[in-house]
Image (tube, rainbow, N blue to C red; front, side, top):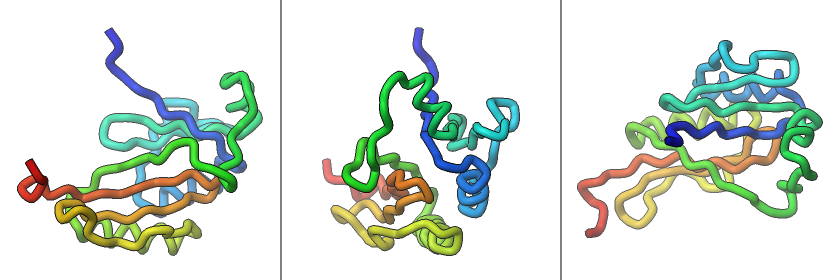
Length: 135
């Protein structure tokens, strides 16, 4: 039975990416692939692995997408409150990331922001008020 997911991202410089995500408040799991060319940070109980691009291409078996020309995936992460979304947005900018959607209410029941990390990957942070979710 499949019971886990590992998200693997190619990055230009693991140490810079690691510093960026640490500034956002993510914790790194040194048990998994903590090397000069890889690192893993935790979201909830799941691990997101960062791999230097050449290493990533080696096990992916093909070329990388050009994130400046298009988006292959949008990672959405849950926040516990609107204040958490606001705080994350501030941390993204302070750490050198780019907010492409400032914190705002969406569809009347979600509050979120969206940002681009140092390697061009797109992230969406959302607080969802389930009591206001349309039925």
